[in-house]
Amino acid sequence: MGSGLDRPLRLDQGLRPEACRPIFRQFGRLHLPGVLVQEDAIALHRAIVGAEGWRRTVHVEDGRDAELSIEEIEELGPEQRAAFEKGLHDMARDSFRYVFDSIRVSALAQFDQPVDPALVAIWRFMNSETFLGFVRELTGDDRPAYCDMMATRYLPGHFLTAHDDEAPGKNRLYAYVLNLTARWRADWGGILMFLDDEDHVAEGYVPAFNALNIFKVPQRHAVSLVAPFAGDQRISLTGWIRSAPPAPGES
Ligand SMILES: O=C(O)CCC(=O)C(=O)O
Ligand SMILES: [Fe+2]
Image (tube, rainbow, N blue to C red):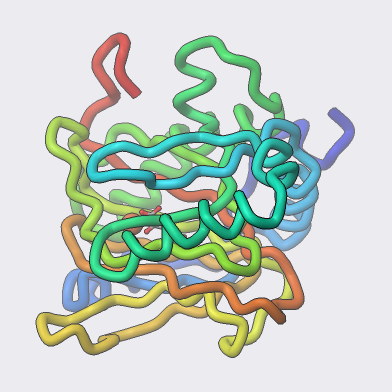
């Protein structure tokens, strides 16, 4: 590949997952900066930004999402596009909806669909003893056995309304977001917000470069709307750490 990703990714040697464990266990979530060797995070960011196969993922109705081609949406005339956005926004007002760009790396690789090989290599790293062992140390939980993964890109107008990540049958233990956003300001939105029982924002994680967010499932959270004036793309690798791999034919 010659991309800097032709050998396994490296976790930063200074990390002390066992020292983070009490905090993680107390709050059920953690933002861990400087998780990869910086040079590897830079190569990873480059691979994701340059990857082929981005699709626009839109949650169109309860329990169903759609993957649309970005070109298709961009080719809509102004009126059709406004109607599409209004429909989505009307539903997002009071229910779970989202729109962002993604490459569903693990789901595609499992079904032998074409997917950028650099991204597949990263997914394999997430399933290596190095990463899963790190997660077991950090959480103090010996169940983590499998990690699914997608790359996500939030552009202005993208959002993910409140939800708790629970998905029956998927064996999700923890959600993770490996932040690879080069430059960000809290003003640009795209904040990962954790909501308490009264809908206050208990904590907000601002997109960062080379930081790992990890949190227990279920837990209510949302990604706030990315502002029209955001100065960069909000890039991450995200998914769930599970107690078992998917059954054959599932993802
Ligand atoms: O991108 C993030 O910060 C969180 C994503 C998320 O909550 C999800 O995909 O379910
Ligand atoms: Fe989530």
